Length: 47
Image 1 (cartoon, helix red, strand yellow):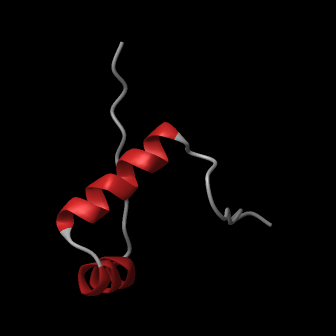
Image 2: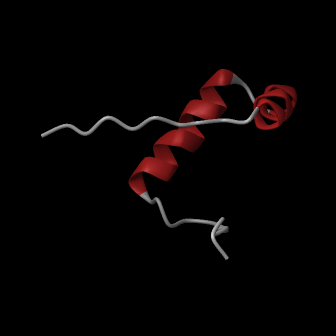
C-alpha cells in the first residue's frame, strides 16, 4: 500500500532553500525525511 506524502513549505522556506540547494538536493532531503521522519529538530506548534 502506498501512502502519499505532501510537503508544505512556507514562502520563506522556499525562497531560502532555492538560494542554498539544488532541486535534487531538496528531493534528497525530502527522501531522508520520509525514511526517517523523526530525524533532526522538532517543533511542536501546540506548546
